[in-house]
Amino acid sequence: MAGVKDKTQNLRLNVRLTPKASRDAILGWIQDAAGMPVLKASVTAVPEKGKANKALIELLAAKWQIPKSAIELVRGETDRNKQLIINGITAETARRILVGQNR
Image (cartoon, rainbow, N blue to C red; front, side, top):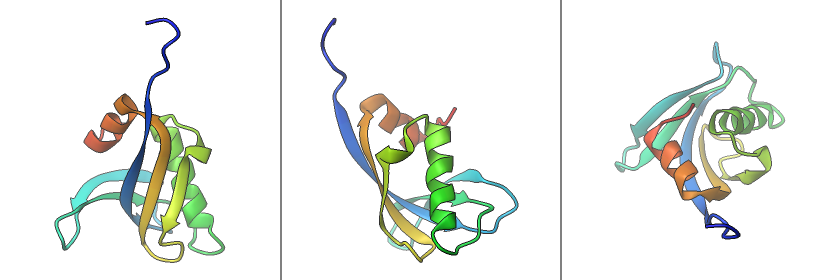
């Protein structure tokens, strides 16, 4: 329908990050001890001065074809377990993220 904008939404994700890895990669979904879904990822960056967090955001933005500015780290700045909010994405993008269709 012309002139109708696609509705956007926010998506909250838990991520388990491995810094200083051999490659930057999204490794898939696992469950934490409480049975909640967690996205596993690795980056080659070191975990100092926010370098690994920045590399994670760049990796996710590139894989999911969304702006880096849409990804916000809300918890876990100095921890491997992080929580992110992906702001202003379409329902289709959210579905691709959640089912792992990262092309």
